[in-house]
Length: 189
Image (cartoon, rainbow, N blue to C red; front, side, top):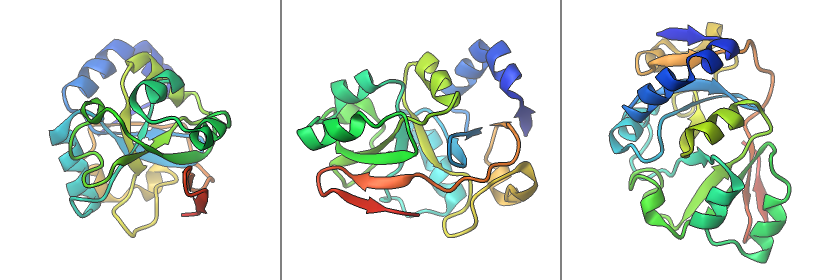
């Protein structure tokens, strides 16, 4: 598994984009904790993340979006959703109705009409913006196990699935707050 610094991500951006487009699974930092992801339209890579996490096949994943314009083009923006979108970027996962089912792989959020969107207040959001497409975002751990806060506590079973890690040092955050914008429910993880 290859470990990259912030500087290396910017210097090797074209190469990393190519790898992500070809199914790479990678760990990356956010404004909260480390996430693991892949291109959100890549069915095979998403399935590998499900296997890595030991997650049931119908559990929905969230995505980091490349822009708020992507959200407006692919999701139903109600007045309640608009109010929450104005709070972004930030440490939230907003549950919003997905209108364009073709915008994501069918196994990204199966059996639900909604998608959890993240637009973190972190430099990595600019990487996703440059990619121009959303990526799957879920904590870098097996389901029910402690989430990754540094390379030292990366689960070796998770590491087996990962092509590269973008590492910026230990994290002391907590997972994002999940907000169902229509129900106005806030869920801490």
